Length: 321
Image (cartoon, rainbow, N blue to C red; front, side):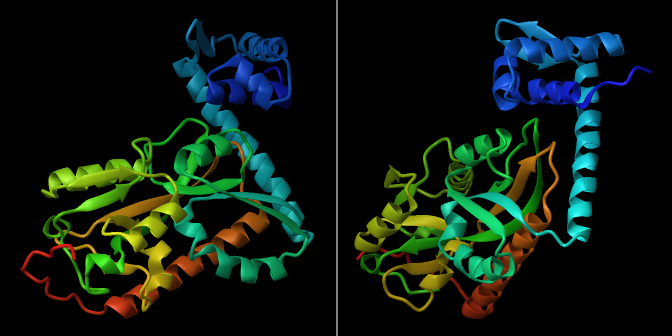
């Protein structure tokens, strides 16, 4: 069988993931005609059509998708072999580009950095804070080694694994009059004036489903994709928001923000680590993630100690102060 050069294989991978010869060329720092020639050469060598071309873009044929998956696995194996060689040589150097949501930068990130940076002084660390849509695009484009985002259906070019299943909490300010750490039913918190993410945010869809399924009546809703502003506004008003426990652990025992576990039923959010399918995580990326997961586990232990055994939910409806 004719050997197919790696650069041609990478061209096939790029076109499949980008759905466009133009975007594939930009990603591979090549010309569009060059990418087209590489793909055509692979199709001639295999004797099969890998892509359907149309005015709307490029889509892989069934044969093309099967070939893509095998190519991604092969390229990943090569990168993993190179990474193993570097690790055996004791090289923990290079760049590490990470994407995190505000959910994790507020309370999780600082303790992780406090440990990771002294351990890996030769690693050039770059962290981007953003919401799931931006971070996903950056991982697909190769601008990030990995990112932590809410669980979603999946996208060609990305692989993911579950990082954590986190409990959602009701966050309010002192004016709302709720007892700190007391369990609450959202449908009992009337009138419920709530700050939520925008409609393109994955967490927003999960919240809307919960509200509709469990009879939560919303008196007023404010869309805001700005975490610091959301927390500041909630702290100063009778408005509330719903956030995962990992972001609010530092509010335990403080008076600026009141945190209450949501019950009857509980509400959870799942977060995943996403990375390009064509890449393997470096040694320092795995070290960062191990420390990151350990810190998330520690935060859950803090919450378990703070909340304790399940408490009886008060039956009277809570009114705003």
